[in-house]
Structure formats: structure tokens, C-alpha cells
Amino acid sequence: MKQLIEIELIKLKANRSVWIMAAIYALISIYIVGQTSSLGSSTSALGASDPLSFPMIWMTGTYMSSFLVFFPAILIILNSGNEFNFKTSRQHIIDGLSRDQFILLKFVTILIIAVTLTLFIFILCLLIGLTAENDLAFGEQFSYIIGYFIYLVGVMSFAQLIVFIFKRTGVSIGVFVGYYFCLEPILYWSVFHNSDAKFYLPIETFDNLLFSPLKDNIDNLNLGFNNLSYSLDWSNAFIALIYIAIYLLIIRTIFKSRDL
Amino acid sequence: MSSILSISNLVKKYPSLFAVSNLSLEVEKGSVYGILGPNGSGKTTTLGVILGVINQTSGSYSWFDNKNIAESRKEIGSLLETPNFYHYMSAWDNLRITAKIKNVPETDIQRVASLVELDQRLTDKFRTFSLGMKQRLAIGAALLGNPKVLVLDEPTNGLDPQGIVEIRELIRKISKEGVTILLASHALDEVEKVCSHVCVIKNGKQLFQGNVNEVLSGENMIELSADNMENLKSTLSTFPTVIDIKEENNKLTVKLNDAGQPIELNKHLVKNGIIVNHFVIRTKNLEEFFLETTS
Image 1 (cartoon, each protein chain N blue to C red):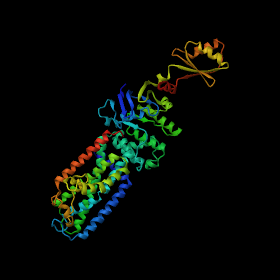
Image 2: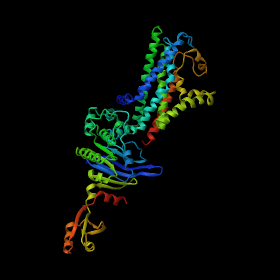
Image 3: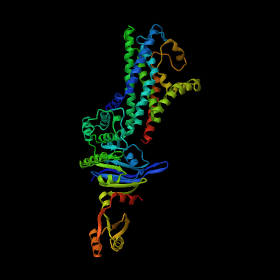
Image 4: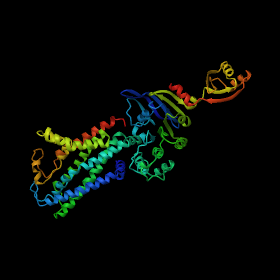
């Protein structure tokens, strides 16, 4: 496992697009959270005082940065797309990885990015919370940090599935963007609008993990699927993990049956 | 002699054709084994299967009689078709990844880099390399960790004459160190020059398997010419060990059977008063053997 992590770190470190996207991601998330500070005095939907102070910040911060999930997802497509484009997926097998190990290797990339971003959001929330001048508190809201991690792993696994199906970076980005911004919203708001099935769409399943504690989001929350709570909905988290496992199984089936 | 690779009844079927059909072979330790065949004959498919990147339709293979196929691949250095590296990464980083997959210490990178004469270019990005350098880097990667076996697919493809000579020298040098080499090629002289054993395949079928010396010895060919060609020809045709006479470029090429001795043939000609002005003994080359076998 250590060896797989080291291999992926070499690839990520040397890749300029990783650094560019990381910089854009960091700047935008700092900007968004900064903008949210102007709402500092508003009350939260849950009646708690300040969404930017402990412990509500764990909920606010993770929800806000979930809008940027597009970046790590594209990064996964670029990273795995390289393996198919440069035929290094083939070379890795020739050099002695089993096909299962290669899939694990690509999942390690997801984990590395998810851990890094979760740490980043943790520190960002910590700093914002501390500037709000109240005492450090984790509370049950801290479970949203775990939710955020699962959310990242989930959306990136979906992106991984797409790139394993289509292999070509450009096509995969097109399919991901098309699905994420067009097809799933259409499915959500029209086809499945009157059914609970809409909560189990491939991306929506992960979106269900994170919530804004701000008052203007309350209408969304009242759609009926989620119980308003300070804590991560663990049953949703469990369903999300099952989706990740399903995506991995499909990736495995595709990759094992394919001639490289 | 222990077996390094054994393939039995390997079949790879694509929707419209059999790329490999019922191929079986044994590669023994220390040999330089050539898989010879025209383009599209199933050489690369065969190598792809034994290196784990192509799923066979049926049949089996094993390396070093080992059960874990992925683990045994770590002891095989391979160059299959084009070199596969990350264009945006330096040669050094690319080799580090290979070394990590094969569980080889990074200190070995310097050794293979100087072996393929790329030690001065290690920090340069792969995309800045020439075709020959890319090929050499791939061979360097294949040599990481002193593999027991080298699998090379058309290793001199696309190289200039000097590059070809260099790669051949390298193959000979490595084989002298006791490394078993499996080489696929359509370049006959390449196989003839470096291989000890050869397997000829065409349309996925195995036509011949055996020792290169066996192929190249046996029948003798003699090239002759004389002032009176008609006379020469008729005299030759009465010699008992001559089995074939061909005329081309004003020379006769005579094929003798296994018992035929060139010196006896010469005596026969002298006895009949024919003085030749050209007499060259040619052992059969692989090209003739190949054309014979595949046609």
C-alpha cells in the first residue's frame, strides 16, 4: 500500500495541472467562505447562532466547498486519462501489478486527493471558527467533515468510472460535465421529481450528505428526504459507501475483461 | 535445463479471426528465443497474453512454474511495442515508478541509465527524447532489478542503423550474463544474428520450433558459374546428391541433399573437364528457411 501511495504521489507532484487546479481550488474556496462571512450575523436554519462559529462552521464550510467538487473530479479524469493515453496502465500490468492492484492504485489517487482536500477544509474551517472568537468546539456537526470526505471519494469514484469506460480524457470530461450539469439536474427536476428515486441518482446520493445550515436553504431541506439535524445522516453515508463499492465493482469488471 | 516459460495450447480469438491458434512452446533458461513471423502473424498478441495485458480465449501459460502470475512479471523485463511513459515526467521519475512497481531500490536506476547511455539525460522530460532515446529508456526500464528474462517485441523497430547495432550489442551482452531472452521480430537477420532458438508463426499458427543451428545447417547450397553454363548445368544435373538447380543472374544455385559434399561436387566437375570461375558455399539463411516454411 505504501508503495502504491508513493507511485501516485510521484505522478501527482510532477503534473502541472494538479498544481494549477489546487491553486484555483484553494483561492475559490477561500473566496467563497470569505463571502459567507458577510452573512455572519444571520441565524442558522436550526436556530443555532452563527453559522461561521464553532460548531456550525463544520457544516457551513463543508457545504460551501462541495460546490467545487468539479475540480477534484476533473483531476481524476485527467490522472486516469493519462494512464490510458500514455498506455501506462498497460505498462503497469506488464511491470508486475495485477489488474486488481491497478484499480486499487487508481483508488489510492482518489484517497490521496480526498484526504488532502478534507484536511484543507478542516484547517480552513478551524481558522474561520477561531476568527469568530468563540471557543473551539467539534460537536456533532464535526461529523460533516467525515461526510465531506465520503462526498469527495464518491464523486471522484463516479468520475473514475466514466474515465474507465471512455478512456479518452476529452470524451470523459465531456460526459462528466454533461451528466453533472445537465442530465442529472433534468432527471432530478423532471423525470424523477415526484419520486424518492431522485435522491438516489449517481451524484445526488453524495449531494445528500452535505447541508447548508443557512436559513435560505430550509426549503430544500423540507423536501422530506432528510431529517433536519446537526449530525451527518449516517444512513445516507452508508448508502453513499454502497454506491462507491458499486462503482468500483463496475470499474473492476470493465478493466478485467478488457485487452489493454 | 529448467523451463522459464511454458505456453500450452494458447488460443486468442477475435470476432473475425484467430490471432493465435493452439500455440505451444517452451523457453529454456539461458536461451535467446526468437518468435519469428510476418506482420500480423500473432507475435505481439502472444507476448501480450504472456505479459498479462491480453486475455486469452483458452489455453494456459506459466512463468518459472510460478503460481502468482503478476508477481512473476516483476522478474521479467519487457518492451512491448512502443515505450510507455508519462510524457510530462522526467526520465528519472518515470524509472522511479517502474522501480517501485518491481520492488527494485532506486539506486539501480543510475546503473541501468548508464547501461543505455541516458545517465546524462535523466532529469529531462520524456517528451524531449528522440525515438531512439525513448526506446533505450524503455530497455533501461526493462533492465531494472536484473530480470531473469527479457521479453522484447521488435526492439529495433524504427531505429537508425547505428541504433539497431547498439541494441543488438546490448542484447548479446545481456544474454551472455545468463539472462533468458524472448525476442519477437519480423527482421530475419536480427533473429539469425542473436537467437539460439526460433519459433516461426504465421496467421497465429506455429509452423516450426527448434534450434537455429538446426535450421541453418543441413542442406548445403552452392553458387557456381563457368564459361559454358549449359555444359555446367548438364554436368551438375547428373551428380547424385544434387536435388535442385536454379539459374539466376548468370549463376547457378545448386542445392545438395544431407549427404552432399561440396568437395565431391567440385571433383566431379573437374573430372568432366569443367573449370568454374565462381564457387561459393552458402549455408541456408533464415530468410530462405522462413520463406520455405511460411509459403
